[in-house]
Length: 184
Image (cartoon, rainbow, N blue to C red; front, top):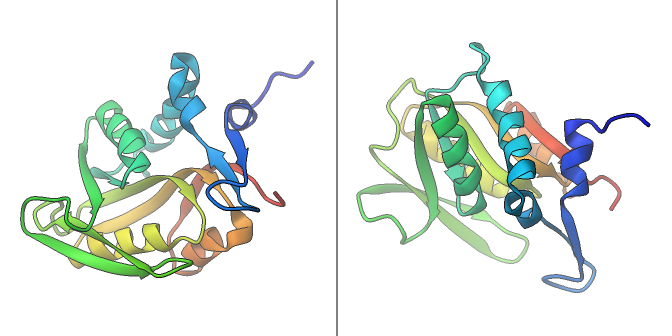
């Protein structure tokens, strides 16, 4: 029997919840990846080992609200770089810049403290999942407003049929994902 790749191993620990939050949706639940310490370490190490490479190493990790905070903070800690949260509107107490983006039904706004990054900072932008790509694109625009360069977008799961990863790549953002659920 062949040993599982890291990607296959992680995929085994992602729970699919049918018909949530709406009928017909196959929700990809990453919480089992976080609950088991061995699985969580494999997940974090998959990102950390990639970004330890000098060419890919960021100055800062930015995490998208809210599951991107879990991953981003631990990855930043392991890389010994700073972490900045990109939050939903109204959650940050200091002066912010904001970016509004379209959702399937309506729109949302995310914010970032104006002193979160410096011009020229190389930033890794991380979230749990890429669906339509709107949140990651908005996060990238926020970071660029402050003069930072987003060197790569990273996520555990890509849902390619929703078009987000393609849209992000076409915008010039390199992407790194661990598991895709194409055709599901």
